[in-house]
Length: 333
Image (tube, rainbow, N blue to C red; front, side):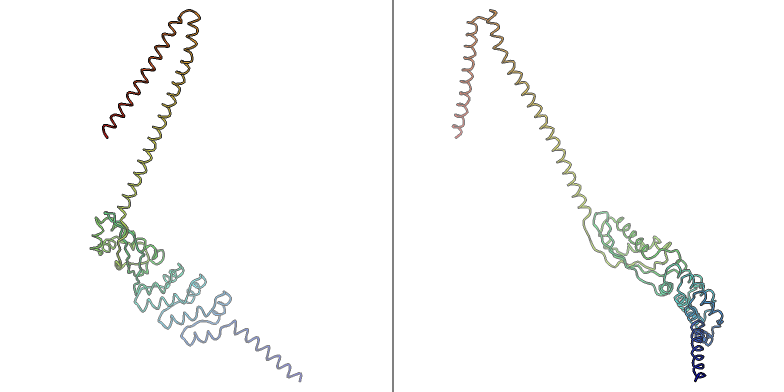
């Protein structure tokens, strides 16, 4: 009984040790690589474990590359993996480039992948060009009419310029700038509507793909719409601004006139005050003259009679003017 227990324990220990060994040493992956024609040493696979590299991420792409006829070094694949690259994507891109007869080396493909671009997609776009559609771009012709243009840009990836080259946003921005320049140099919006291919030819001659990761094959005008009359709107705004300026100047002149009128009223009131003050001094002067004998009583009464006669004549003259005006109004009736 004791011997049987010892055998069971021994078998369990052996099974556990074998499981740990197989989980650390990928024998299954080694057999797969061996029968696929890829010579990878078991020590290399164990070393990958110590370098924190998943062997399956290296061996499977290497098997794929070998079957496709590519001669690659496993150390390069492992180095690209440790640099944070996608080894499987790079291998797929190399296979696609080989089938399309595109000269693409592993180092360039790895650099494109590490630059953050989809290297397989870049190879596919290089083989099968893609179409980039721009948003509606507003431009104004010389006659002041706004023209809305939408274009489709057919591009092909340039493998040589994928590293460090500008992306689709730059292509769209440059095409938009070319459309605005072309429409803005047209004498009339009708010329743009009659010859939309003029925009395509003019923009293509500018070399907009310089410094980008793409090669522009064609620029096609997809849609042209007429927008606002910018010239008329600007003239209206200018007229409104001139009107406001004129109103402000008129208000300024009115304020100055009111100020002058107020000054004149103040001056008249001041003069009236001085006249009243002077008139108040007349009785005092007459009293002084009577006391000193410079003015006699008869002279005083003669002056009063003259003033009364003058007032009476003025009253009669005013009444006569009023009657004359009334009679004239009745005669008109």
